[in-house]
Length: 420
Image 1 (tube, one colour):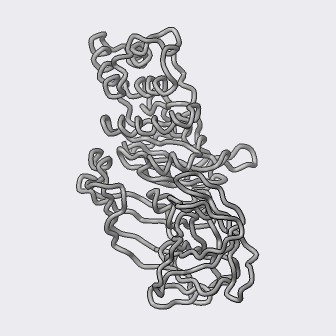
Image 2 (cartoon, rainbow, N blue to C red; image 1 turned 180 degrees about the vertical axis):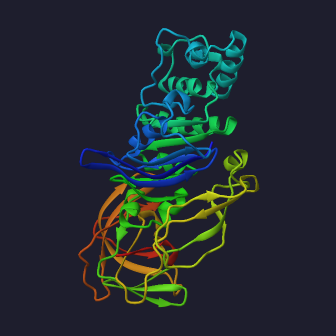
Image 3 (tube, rainbow, N blue to C red; image 1 turned 90 degrees about the vertical axis):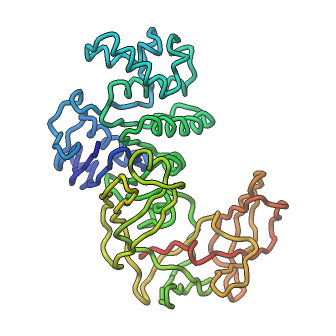
């Protein structure tokens, strides 16, 4: 089912909760609503379910307006943080509950329930009661109950938040496997960036009721449209201000207290985007062998930020995205620039384009496969800068020591540049 939101507004008294939300969720997408607590993501999810009405705007399912449609007629069940299972009923009866409410014949109830328990890998547990299951298995029972009624879409309200860390990771894989075996449109609310990054087809990031950016996980991580998006998607090291940008061919030259930094300008993209993904191919959203972005047909630069839409022939693997963009900064404009802790090299090459920074180690935290370093950068004049960077060194051969001087490299493509 295709879900469309058009200029959705919601306020409680004088406090705005949702402010002009517009987006399109394509059939069989795993679309994640990501954001901090109180950003409006659960309100938006409950609005899709029919529990809350918008003050303004339209909600469309497959092109039909559903603002006034009762929750039970929308066919979009919700999977909650709490499993909401009947403790005295078996796994089979919990999964079959919605079908019995619909009054289907017993033979049809059994056929549909066993089919969905096979998809969720619970057929062997059909006669057990919830108290005899693990937390992850109970969550799969709740998903089975939702899938059994053949929904148009599923709504997930932080369904893994009650599980321990190890089980959460396992359940991410389980949910993706269920989605592969039985594709469905899903809207999934979470505040966990890692959960969204590892599972989502696309992510919509909200803050204070506003949709800041929508795109593929790697787009929000590597091409954020503003500082909030950059910092929410992961740790950032910001270069000391002020920064002024000039152009040198395809590169930006950033004048910083640490010297000249080279970076690529922010991308402004519209047109055809090929997403190669076995998951999307199975669901009719793409084809190929990885989740990475493929070819882009780049449009003109300098346009205002827009809400991305996915259009086109899903069966061909061609997804036409109109992507959020801030445009490229003009010469002399003040900018904000930084890099991720994991994007540095600790043996920078001697290429002309690599940005090098001399640093002094202030603190080391060794964690086996990697070590976290807190460092102070040194300016070109040999003076220490009034800044600290967080670095992550993978597969360290030794534990680095406090006071040690190191040189790190940051490639131009790893520098994130934002307009101020």
